Image 1: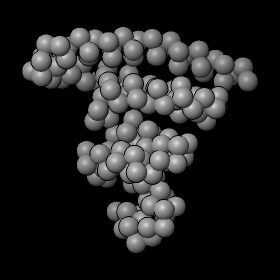
Image 2: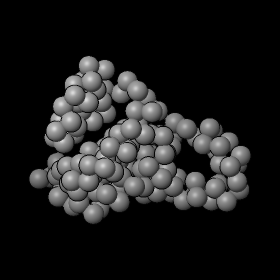
Image 3: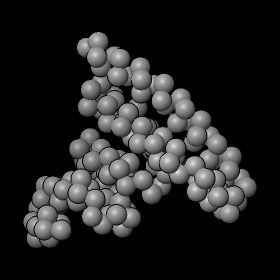
Image 4: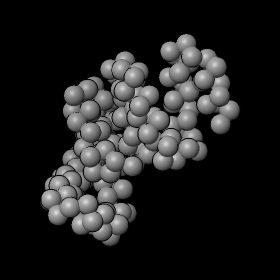
Length: 146
């Protein structure tokens, strides 16, 4: 349990920084689309890392701690920070599918992620698994083949 506590302490430290980036993004949005786009371009690497951290912390909160609402909050923050982060979209889709049994929302998130990166193996596999659970076997097979 000590290792999980240590891991969570590191996630929390990273979350503080990631949430500051989210606040900065919200401030940049007030300057308009051009200002936001320039800020996102200048900081794309850090934004992506911060979104990954938030999303992975969401996974940790759900799978290790069993905290569903806190996990969902982290996934939502990750996507607010980076709407096109395919890992965060896929993680939130899996959360919606597995924890909420909200297949419609999960499918929407998977489709958005796959529109951005049609060859993302993790999202393709998870989406196909969900389609199989839903009894949509032909669609699942098509996704598996991709």
